[in-house]
Image (cartoon, each protein chain N blue to C red):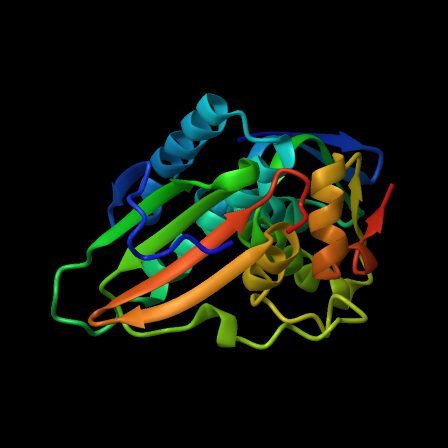
Length: 100
Length: 149
């Protein structure tokens, strides 16, 4: 798994690639929470390079979403590969996050 | 299409009771997928389901038990292009299929963390079966080429 973080105006973009599996979920969650603390804008997770996600990866996104929610900040996801989109649809996570 | 007990596995791998061992198991599975020509959907479904199931066994299956953990995954090449995996472990008796599916959450605030693994397995696989045999759990996962039975 690789994560590149870049600023886009007020927002922070995390470009993720590789596997969001059980082993990678904790460092992914850490990067997300670092980004939550480091700015006040939205966080955008670019998933174009992610070819695998398990429930541990979903959990990391939910933890970050819950940390941002009281401050009315948004966690957005973009460019999900078809099977990743399917995982989000089946788990109900498509309805929890803005996906473009 | 659950493989019968007397069917000899095509391949097997022993798994350490450690999350750090999961990438090695995923590589083993990728090798089988390549060799036996699984469809992308079978590959994704079995990869995901095996990881979900092993994560549960490793994380919770041996809490408070005195015995050394033993975990093995057997692979069965089945008729009509189906592929079966059976996780055999000597941990606490636990039927993953007894877990209720998480309720559909309406917001990030109300969403429950966890409980989605079995939900995903049921979606991507055609057959799932649990059995306690003596002192071991047998959890079997089967995928079909077209996602149909």
